[in-house]
Amino acid sequence: MKSQQLLSRIRQAIDKYHMIEENDSICVGISGGKDSLTLLYALAKLKDFYPIPFIVKAITIDLGFENNDFSKISDYCESLGIEYHIEKTQIAQIVFEERKESNPCSLCAKMRKGSLNEIIKQMGCNKVAYAHHKDDVIETMMLSMLYEGRFHTFSPVTYLDKSDVTIIRPMIYMNESEVIGFVNKYNLPVLKSACPVDGYTKREYVHELIRQLNHENPGVKNRMFTAIEESYLDGWNKDSLELFARY
Image (cartoon, rainbow, N blue to C red; front, side, top):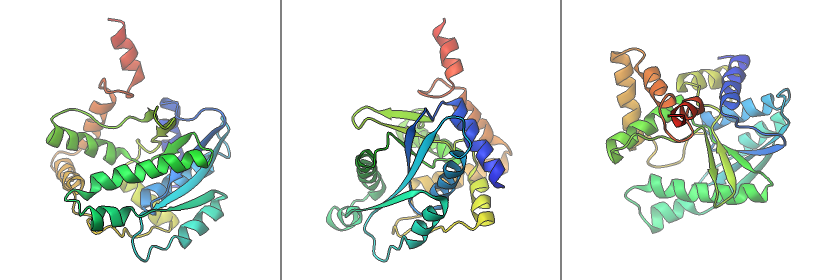
């Protein structure tokens, strides 16, 4: 995928779901993975010509794993002209050593998001951009159906009233395969995850399940996404919601 194609997909989501308003200060959470680095690139380039002015900043929540080196990420942000902040935490120690969680992903995610929401306000940001792509949307829906018994996934835009922060997800129209292609083409400085349970989660199981379903039934993944976008889930397909409200 070329840069122009990436920006087109990102802008499609931003425009449809009104993710950016004038003079927004948007923070991108950078894990060092392929998704967040791609999103940062896209927003950094988009702000130079988007008709609505906005600011982009970046932050990494350092979970406290040994040998984490974010110097390449810092250099990457500098090359894009983006302000970058590293927030050090002891989340890894709490989750894996003190609490010894049997389901570490849930607690880790909550603590990481809590730290992120607190810091971005200190950085003067009113929005945070998450790098969830189309595969993430579908996998979250499948996880909810299989393990919670409900049809649910996250919204393109979510306002958190407790922290007064708005979450936006500009990559919802991008397939993971396209992200991988972009990262390889532009040689983005992806960091290997230091998490000891990386690749051994329920999400990874669902990821493989959907991949197999799509292999056996070509196009099923896109049809699943269409079902989500045309549903009455909170935040999705505002046109359908407005039509439904008339009756």
